[in-house]
Amino acid sequence: MDNLYQTPSSELIIEERPRDMFFVTSLNKLFTLYFVTLGLYSIYWVYKQWDTQRAAMRPRRISPAARSIFQIFFIHSLCRLIAKQLQAKGLEEWKYASVAWTYIALIFVSNGLSRAGSHLGAPLELMLLLVGTILPAWPLSIIQTKANLVSGDTEGSSNSRFSIGNYLCMVPGVLLWLLVFIGYFL
Figure 1: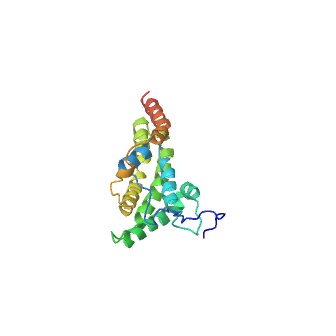
Figure 2 (figure 1 turned 90 degrees about the vertical axis):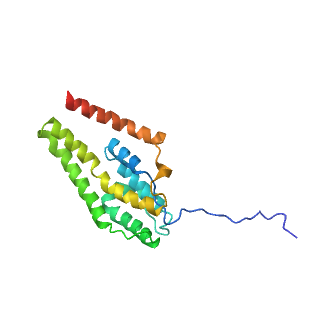
Figure 3 (figure 1 turned 180 degrees about the vertical axis):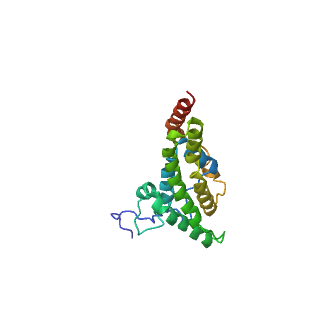
C-alpha cells in the first residue's frame, strides 16, 4: 500500500546543451552588427560563445563575461574547443592558431588606425576608420563558420534574422556613423 503522506516523486530531466553546441549566427548578421556597433558586438559574440560552453565545462566554473571583456586572452581557447569538436565529429581538422593570432593582431592594428588618422586628411581618415572597424570581423567570421559547422547549422539560419534587441543595439551605432559622415563631409 502506498504512503498517503509521502510527496510524489518523479524523475527530473535536466536538459543541458550538448557539448558540441556553440553560439550560431549568420555571417551577414555578424558583419552587420560588428560594423554598426563599431566592433562592440565582439564582446557580446564572445560572451555568447562562452555562455554556451559553460554547462559543458562543469565542474570547472568559467565567467563568460570576463572572457568576453578580456577576449584577446581567451580567443585561442575558444578556437581550440571548436577545433576539438570538429575533429571529434570527423568534420575536418582545423589549424586555428593563425586565425586567433590574426584576430588579436587586427584588434591592435584597428586601435592603432583609429589613433593615426588625425593628420592624414578627411578622405584617408574616413577610409582608415571604415577599414579599421570592419577588418577584425574577418577572423571572427572564420571562427563563426567553424562554430556553425560544429553546431550543425552551416549557414547560421537559426539566428539570421535581426531581433528587436539587435536593432536597439544598432541605433546608437547608426547615429554615431551618421555623425562621423556628417563631420567628415562638412
